[in-house]
Amino acid sequence: MKAFIGLGSNLGDSVATVRSAFAELGKMSASTLLANSSLYRTAPISGAQQPDYINAVAEIDTALAPAALLAKLLALESRHGRMRPSPNAPRTLDLDLLLYGDRIIDEPGLAVPHPRMHERAFVLQPLLELAPECVIPGRGFAREFLPQVSRQRVEILA
Image (cartoon, rainbow, N blue to C red; front, side, top):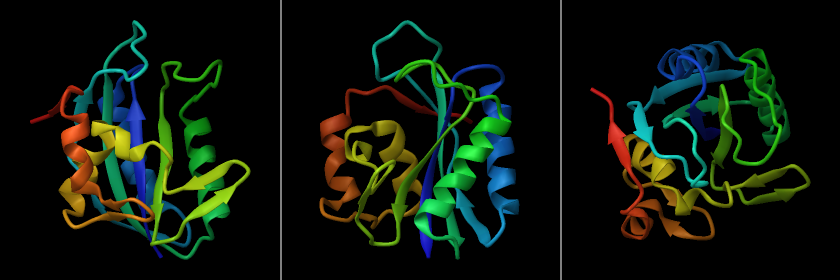
């Protein structure tokens, strides 16, 4: 199954953390890293005073079921020191299961497609870099949401 993972970090050496997470996704059992986007510097969505984020998207092919894939992603976050003191708190590493094929999943602790991905430039820009014709199941083409998020600051890193 093809899946897309959103990556983000705004604590510590975020560039190194996201690059390390790409490498670890490439070594994840029952999965193959197909592609990774460029890195993007983005403003925090919450409006809180915190450092900018480094965001990216990875495309994988996986034999893992959605819940098993999410468990692996959460374990990878933990290995990078992820704490969850409050929603929208700064983070060493954030991994979101954005898309899992064309499936729509609504289970406790797991919502796919990610319920706010179409509202976030830091997800849409790197996702469309990898998959310009990407469809968000139940919503439509991802590119159709870009005008709605055009005021969110997203800068590609050289």
